[in-house]
Amino acid sequence: MEERREGTAGPAGEKAARARRFVEELLRRMGAAIAVEVRDGPEAIGLALRPGAGNAIEPTPALVEAIQALVNRVVNPEGEPLKWVNVEVGGFGEEAEAEVRAMALRLAATVRRTGRTVAIGPISARDRRLIHLALLEEEGVATESEGEGLFRQLLVEPFAGPKRLAVRE
Image 1 (cartoon, one colour):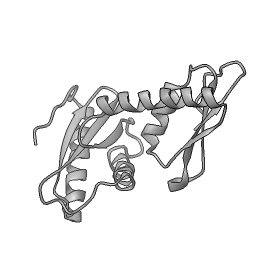
Image 2 (cartoon, helix red, strand yellow):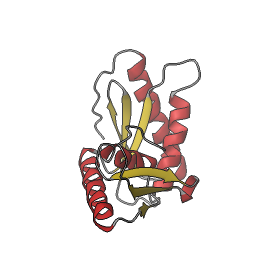
Image 3 (cartoon, helix red, strand yellow):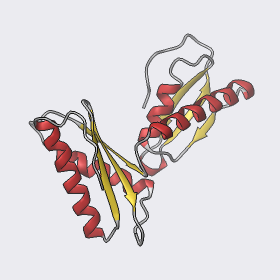
Image 4 (cartoon, one colour):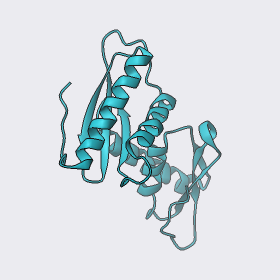
C-alpha cells in the first residue's frame, strides 16, 4: 500500500516509520491481512487499517483501541517528545469526523427538545472526544463521560446555566 507522509524529516518521520513497522508486524503475527497506511502530520501520526481479501481478523473497536494504546507506547518511549498515533479502520477520518459532529448536533437537538439526558455508549475515546468538542459551545446542553473501560459512556445532558468551556472526560 502506498503511504502518504507530510512533515517526515527528522525524528517525526522516524516515529511514523516505527509506528507502521510495529503495527504491520503485530497484525502479521495475528494472521491478519490488513494493510497499514500512514499519514504523518506536524502534531500526530495517523494509521489507517485497510482489511484485505481473505482477512480473518475483524478490526473491532476494542482491537483498534488496543493497537492504538500499544503503538503509542512503542513510538513514544519516556524521554522522547510525544507525538500521538491515531489508529482508524478503513481510511482517514475526515468524513467520519463530519458524521460524528453531525450526530452530536442531532443529539443536542433531541436533548433540548425533550429535556432528557441521552446516553451514548460504548463508543471509541476518539469519537467521545469529538462529541464533547462539537457540543462544547452548544447552548442548552452539556456533555460528560462516565464509567470505566468498555462500560464508559457519554452523556448529553440538558444544561441551563452559563456555558462552561471545559471538557469533562
